[in-house]
Image 1 (cartoon, rainbow, N blue to C red):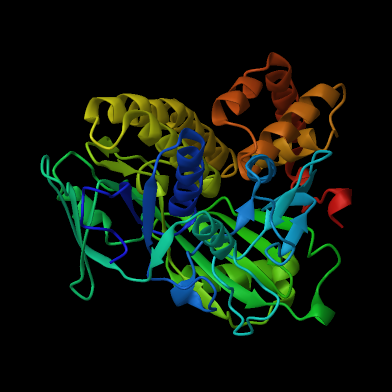
Image 2: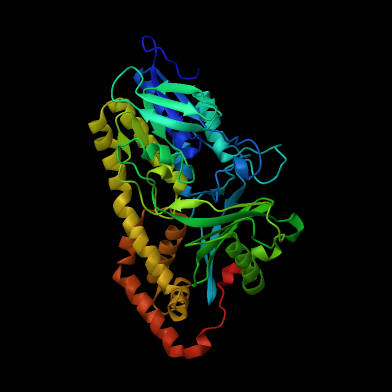
Length: 459
């Protein structure tokens, strides 16, 4: 059995439920810290998916964009991505609204990458390596063990030699000293953790819809491989849609409330006919599609004796940086576990739960405020156009305001800066003055202002 039953000679036994980024990051960091501190540990990762195989059943249903900040953090941890993991290098974002578009160039030195979370939609396995498989392989190289089984039952005991009891889908039983919940919000495993009785509740979620569309090389428009296109329709149910290039495919993802796959079909039709964006050349039938959930709140309880919840099953940044958030929460959990040990409930709650909630909680509330405000702005064409013109530097004496606004928009959609920093930039009186002046110019120009406008750099 992967997790030893004998307590006399056994190292610290850690069971990680979920082998995605959160589980892999935890395992990598924990095993590294144990080596540094002379702690004997055995980590077993329970993950039924096979990230080396193509198709939706082995994918973690994610847009697959790595922010520049995350790429830098991975390199600092010695996790430089092999070229066969990287699908595309992004040099700019393009925002497309009902009244015009805006190009946001990546800052100097920024490295934004797109990856597949599973092997990808294509059945050919040669030459590719999924991001999740790369992380899992790294954890296994440090000594972790993977069990390709789904855990059906979890139980905690306050005393005794085996405080953690697990049962997999085949009825096989396992015991451990520490339980790490890295199962994600789209897994039913969260129900088992809710029944443990320490106060964990799965986070509230919203819907997303994703699909992978093939894009033949001869039909790709100029720039399609280096830019991510963000559509902001200004009408419900779609809050925004994103087109992410990945070599010979693009990932189309929609975010909003109550979305379904029919909304995806309507989005592709409308963007192809009315926007003239790169999706217009995409083959009409997706290779694979899914409707994952993503968290919009966090669980009130993330820690108990012998148990920690990491990744978006517990807490993550609002609308952004799910993988970055997984790295932060998993790394902190590993550090706290090494320091406190499995049984110190007070220490685990104080040093992990309170710290990670303090780091993300207030920041997420600011993020919710900013996205709601931006959503309302984009429901008013005059305000939308005013923002576009200001960001393009088309208003007199607005150079600094335009620079600030472009920085705010870049970081809202890439997640490179925390929301509190973005919010402070929004409070700059020079930016507020520029927005007011631009809005007045649009309103005074009347209806003639509302033709489709495009940033010259977008063409």
